[in-house]
Picture 1 (cartoon, rainbow, N blue to C red):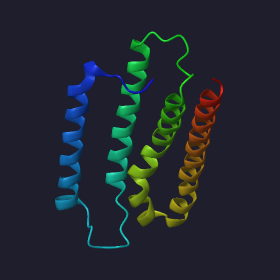
Picture 2: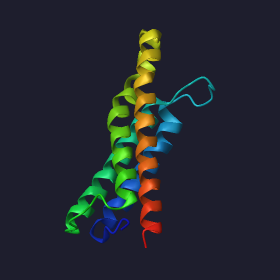
Picture 3: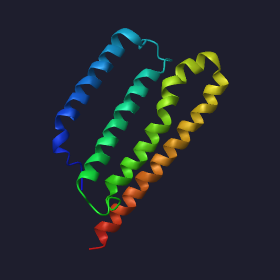
Length: 139
């Protein structure tokens, strides 16, 4: 159960270092973080992209384990929900700030896509809690 990805430790470390560098560069050169009304779409898109990479690494580790029932653990359901959330919201986050300036009504409506994806994420997390409790009391 859990994330046993011993062969991908260097890649995870490299991704962490690169993401911290991107965040620092974004803070310094690209975004206006002095404005409290500013939403950082670039930062949210990078975050979604990195989370998707980590989800894909999780799936890869599950496939390497040769486990016959990969859906048995609660961690699988959390990662499924997170994967769906970031896949749906990557483009919402990426284009949200330009959309605000060009068509604020469309930006307001497209945020409902984010809300629906968030509800799906919460449903999958609830499923993980349900499976965890069911496995705990099934002994």
